Length: 64
Image 1: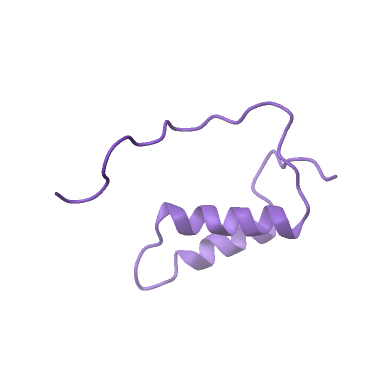
Image 2 (image 1 turned 60 degrees about the vertical axis):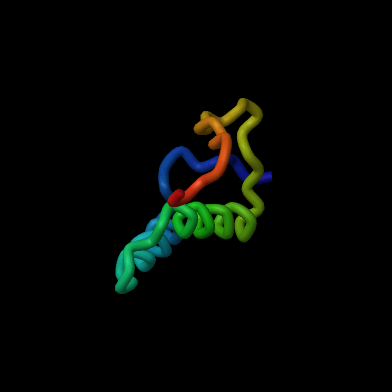
């Protein structure tokens, strides 16, 4: 099991920077997708403690 990185690893940083070069700015979901893929690729397990998270949105999301 590999340890959770304390900084952004070089190859992940390159991937995130490449997302910024697209014509349309990436959404947070794209960033999270790149991070998630990197963690899976390198077999990194989450830390033993809970990670901070934003509360889930209640109710409908989007334009009304």
